[in-house]
Amino acid sequence: MNTKVAIWVVVGLLMVGAFALTLALSDPPPPKRFVIATGDPSGAYHSYGQKLAKAIERQGGPAVEIRTTQGSAENLRLLAEGSVDVAFVQGGVPSALRGTVDLDEVRSIARVYSEPLWVFHRAGLDLQLLTDLRAGRLRIAIGPDGSGTQIIALELLKANGVTEKNAKLLRMAARDAVAAFGRDEVDVIFTVAGPNAEHVQKLLRNRDAELMSFFNHEAYARRLSYLQAVDVDQGLLSLEENLPLRPVTLLAPSATLMTRESTHPRVVELCTRAAAEVFASGNLLDLAGEYPSSQGLEAPQHEAAHRYLSEGESWMSRHVPFWALLWIQRLKLLLIPLLAVLLPAFRVVPAILGWWVRRIIKQHYESLRDAEARMRTATTAEELERELAASDRIEDEMKDLSKRIPGNALDMLYAWRTHVNMVQAEALARLRELRGSDAADIPSSPYGDLSFGRASSDDTAA
Image (cartoon, rainbow, N blue to C red; front, top):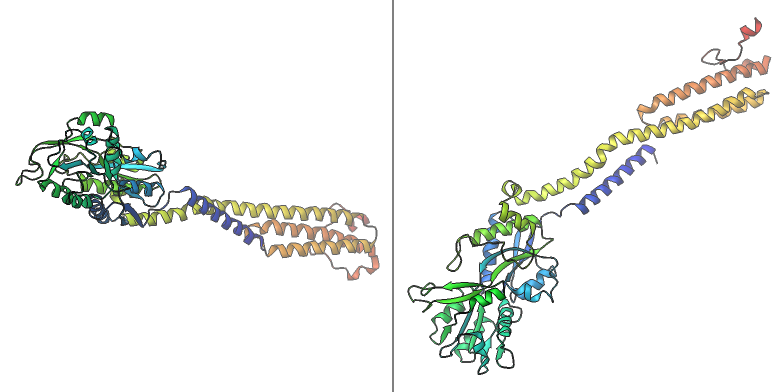
């Protein structure tokens, strides 16, 4: 293979290696789509997930896939195993599942709104505290498996001594529990939902149902940090119907938007920005500007979300469209290898070629020196002719080399060829002397008399 070509092949391989290294060490490009786990299609998580997706779409972000689930517990498991990128998770669920779900890669984006725990019971039951549920083996709907409602219900019931031994715990969805309540098959319903949830509105208007107030809410908030008290004044939910009929205090975890540490920072920033757009205005229970919040998180906050909530929108987010990031990333992957390998190669390759040519010419100079020494010590014309033939072969090799070396190295090559002609001229002159009268067929030197230290014929005559 031509040496110059071989060197550029090496440079090409170095560029491929630099490209692979850049790809391995650089941040991955923003995805073209990502998945948000919500909950039941009729629930608040699903509705808010759709609002977030629309807000992200308006921002020019990637496509958002909404995945329906059984609720917070399933969402957290899907997030931990990497099946989804973002998820709604009810407060208290990460703490409850920490021993059974690997949360090392799970990160919080922000708490986004309060999710009150509503405890409805059949009218006529004297239910002041949850400890009262221990009497009469009551039928208690605690939410479906995989839901945040069931996790918080079981934790609160356990703290008050209510178990399968003294109550009948029914694992069913809220809409099924409301239907069972109407058939007199359920006595108490636990549900975590927003005030506008359809099943909450039905139970508020059901004359057979009463809403429990947590009079000892401060004790719960101190023992379970993810809970906070929410006061619902009389008539707050409906002035026309005066709902609720009396002031009540509810316990409320917060819905938290969560992600993975490996989620692209721009995606996290877009989700945080969309959450601010959707939730910052507040609602009947949350004050405007209260959410999204970085306070009281049960998992470390993703760096991009923390930066957005503490410092505001990044320069990149304000000035560079999402689609442009893909091209910036691709250009970076191309430019870094070019700058790191190709530009230095324009200086290194000529130096390598020069070193290679000098090395070869040095070797031929050594051969020429040896040949000259043998020519000077030759005692017969035949011996001298053999050395001249050997020098011709060396010269032919150099002529072949001239076809492969770069033009800026030809001066060294022609300098060598000049020197070899000088040595040959001296040998030819000596050969004529050795052959005497038979020297007519010996060509004369194109350089004239180049005896290099030997006495010329004129000097000898003198």
